[in-house]
Image 1 (cartoon, rainbow, N blue to C red):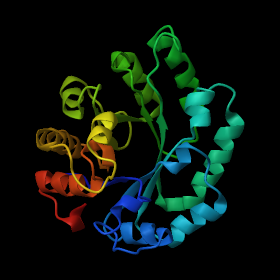
Image 2 (image 1 turned 90 degrees about the vertical axis):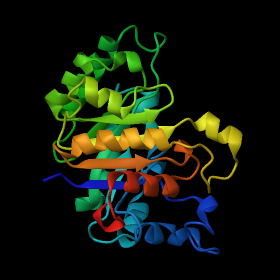
Image 3 (image 1 turned 90 degrees about the horizontal axis):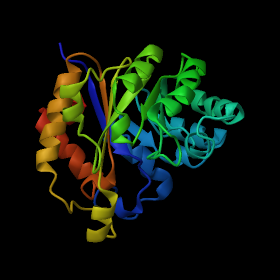
Length: 269
């Protein structure tokens, strides 16, 4: 029996969606409740910029149904500014906020930037920081890890994640190997579920449109390949998929195309 695939967007607070996804005239305060009527999960981007307040998290809880799920990006103060060094106070503050979500908290995501030799002399130098950080991360909060240097996607990184049951985030992104390539090359399941992000090429989309309310790049072939990767993964574990507006120009349209490619009805996602 295949495992559950849940698909959502990277964020929900987009004024550009008014009139196409949200009814014209919708208040920003109502975006999340309307979003949650269509999708079962969402990836929170705002937490990357700052730890959410209790009031903010309580608002998310009040506006979403019982079985809705959130994935929270870990603040950039941890991943980009301090790069896992001397950041326990920041981690504790973030975890206190994240835990307020209770069973609606699906995962937290460490999204790292592209690290070149000006940051780390080697992948191993980075892993020497990542390994103890993952070891200290509390087991009751699932954690996923995304790195953006394709040259580091090798067995030492994979085994570091697997040792700590941290989930490897696979990205469909301009300069990275596709999820399907990675699924064919490695055993990518390092934790209790799979995590895929459809990110695309931000610069290419921005050159074509200033309003993220319609598809501007045909990603049909990539969507089919991503669906193939998801299909292989769901045979072994549940799969979370998050789609960015900058994948093709408008994430709700991409989500529907991916659902079709997977043969999923909205109620099954």
